[in-house]
Amino acid sequence: VEIYGDYAIIGSYWDQVDSVKTGSAYIFVRDNTSWSQQAKLTASDGAADDEFGRSVGIYGDYVIIASLSDDDNGTNSGSAYIFVRSGTSWTQQAKILASDGAADDRFGTDVAIYGNYAIVGAHSDDNPSNSGCAYILEKSSSGWIETHKLKSTDAYNDDSFGASVAIHGNYAIIGATGEDTHSSSRGAGYIFELVNKDQISSV
Figure (cartoon, rainbow, N blue to C red):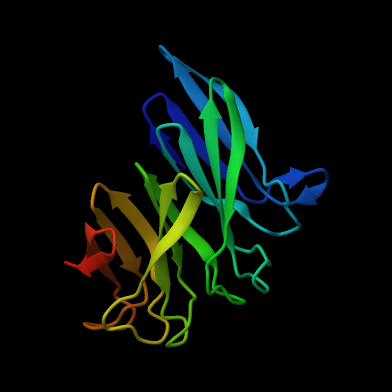
């Protein structure tokens, strides 16, 4: 779930669409003290067990919805969808795949959006095995483009870096639930700063 202003989004990643368990997400809008459903969002190319709605984010007129079991780049490689609001209507603007996506990366483990930027975690990305990563996306005149792939400086097997993500202003924070510097799978969080459009630095 996620909320911004008078709008909230709720994922339902096992929802059946046309009798197929593809997943969906619901938009609710507030009017004074009442909340009502404004839209039900589904992927334009949803397929069985894609888990569309597994994680969601909202900011302004945009939402990002993860489909971490989508298979476009290999089984369970994952994807993310951007929807935009015009009045009371929401339409799919883009489907995003990792530029180097591979089977079982789980691109879309967690997602967030703020301003012209979005972040997508892929906690099972390899190198080393299941160390994880996160991708920064930027909205431009030509659509949403991948600008950076972030990894921890001390990446290790099964860190699951990218299991949770958040972004605000020039900062992003990325969780690594399996990081074990101090004890087994104790976890860690990494903060990155956007220095300029060509450079993101660990803080």
